[in-house]
Image (cartoon, rainbow, N blue to C red; front, top):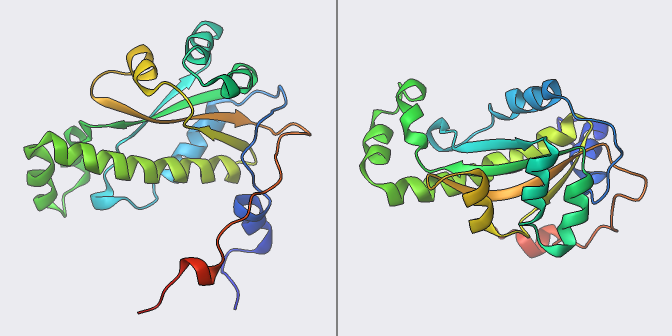
Length: 196
């Protein structure tokens, strides 16, 4: 049995792709990031909501402010990556929904009513979009180094606001020669899948 996606694309997105820990100094352009976003924004979320917000950290001053909030093991690679992105969930994503949801009027009532409902939905769907963003980075021929080892409250205070919850920080660029650790084991199909 085969997949519709050819083997080269499967390798690019999954088999040969690893979390990168070192990068070349080749820059990542705004056009590349826009192409990535324009691709991944089409992937599914509940009611097509789009809670993911991305802060591109390009200036040296902003980079140093971010590095100060990273765990010690993530500081050097964050300091030297060609591009760093802070991914966050917008807990007020519902403000964009009227234009996005002509076919789901019930969602408008649900999300406009209570903040805890929005926060839960933003966290889940923002995480989905973050995963799509990682795949989009790989589809662009770049490598991603996603990290959750940082001071979430510090990053929120420094770069976001109370309506945005940090999800992860991602280093982005062309992988250096020694960018990858050996692949860790994964669960097999039989370990992860049950049929009822």
